[in-house]
Length: 603
Image (cartoon, rainbow, N blue to C red; front, side, top):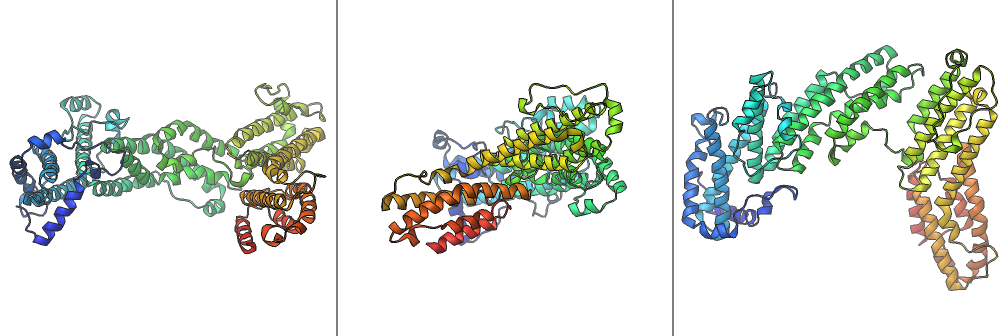
């Protein structure tokens, strides 16, 4: 029987119901949901009030029988564990109740039956919440998510058949597998979960369903990662480890990552896509929350790569790279949504370096190449009769062999030169990822300068020779010059050309305003950019200052006297420019705030 209510609570509930059912869209959590099967206006016209009341009366006995707060035996019984026909009837009753409520709101929103219907809906949802929790909890060690992957790999389903619990053909197909009982059980349980989720989502109770699913399935995935030996390591912990302990972690990770990617995460996605096939938004949100532990898994190789161990330990790192390459297609397929992009980026080498600084690939590869150079005598015996193939697909400007070495070391020099060439070409590709072209040239200048510094301070200098260093130093200058032109071109062009006629006061004021805006924009944009090499950083700032400050000083001294209010119209004096330029390329975002505060004070 329905619970007694006060007149005040009934009136309040009617108002809520009228709002809830006034539009079918209010039952959806987001626009990506399937539109609920709301009776059309023509259906309303033939669905009389007596029929609505008859429907509510018919479903009342079925729903109240399974009231989770009643004193009957059904309070502790499982609706979906016993007679499946009764579970079908219960879901169909909820569907009919929902249709009757839509019709009542449309035809007679003040009907007493509307309050009864809402009370019945609340009982039904409490029962479904309990059943959903019970199935997920009871089957945490039994359910096989992959058993539904063949049915829901694309996440599609027909939500219109919301009271279906799995066809006989599906059970028959599952029974033909190598493990009949387990697969049939898994299919039945996943079908029950999907049926409950579909019903709750359509009835406007998606948040309750999602909360239960996330909590239970996340604990299962986290436990799986723990059993695989995956922990959340901090960089400081990795750095303090001796090599034997770290090598043990690497070997364990190599075993765990394949199981996690190809079984744990893949199966979880299949199950999540199946249960919440009604909504792309919900299944992406649930899967993202459940698999957050994947960040620990896929972040581990990066932590190891940043560890300053001996360069000779390259082979375990190569194994890590090979393992990541093997699972890359699976990771791309599993973590394919925007909400899981953070995990996918942990397994990607395409992440851009903030501020155009030195790429980790540059640091590691040059370190290993310089270490190889220390073994040039041994290498000369290995590569004496071979030389690297020159692939014409690489930029022609890079194809310059070392010329200052001869004899048995020439082949070694050629191979080392080729390795650096491959690195440079990879850096070219990475530079293309920057949206700001000037930043891409700064990135190239920084990384090539780092390589040059490594060559000049190791045995690589002897093997590659002065000509090689000279030619690549010219490239650094070219990159830096292109950066300067692209990043500061608007500032330079905002000033009149040298020896141009004197401007009128109004034209001078406009010119000052253009320059102020261009200079401030350039400084703010480049406030977080970096040039790690002190010599290159100083040379860049000196070059920009030589081009900018004399021209601005001449314009400033000539035209400021023409402006009666120049202290208000002109933001920057020549000395201000020098001060701001001196603070650039340290990656100091605080500089941007200081610039904004300064200009605010000036005005």
